[in-house]
Length: 235
Image (cartoon, rainbow, N blue to C red; front, side, top):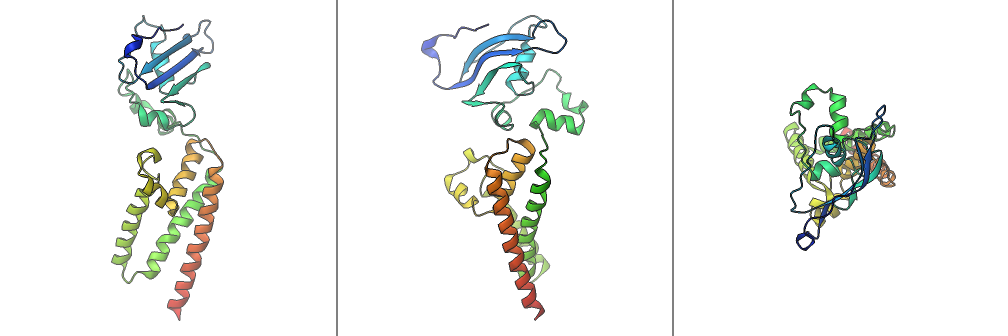
């Protein structure tokens, strides 16, 4: 089924959704919920779906927001396949289901799965201790250098805020100034966030090896410095 475009002279240069030959067939049903749908939605365009109950409107919308895996076909949002990055749709699309209380009846695990496509990769059990050791090592270094507990707390808070703002820790990389992305390469929080993101949301890429290598090196360096400082204090 192909939906013809609207007035071509008024079509935007930016394609928001590009859906090609999309089909969804549920197990145990003789007819697919939707079949061979091809359409494009441009930036600034108002697009509606009309049809009787059971026509596949809700199924299509759930496919478009990556809550329902398609049987075949492709969905591209702003030039990127929606199943390539679990955060791509939540960062660009707002979705309100028919049942506004839907999340209230889900378990924590179900809510994580349907809203963030949470997938626990076994490498998480390597990532978690490495992240904890490297970041706690910085706290230990501050602790042995600070003159009072109050000073240590203030320095820890300041450093936490700085590391959260440097690099794609909290804010996506495409929304950060280039200077912060460059400075973020010197922050362990950047590599910890990248490793956690890949271990929990996927997909795993070669960057995970860089993240783990940097976190390991930073952990060793920080604890070596802490050890030297503590030896100095004992003398």
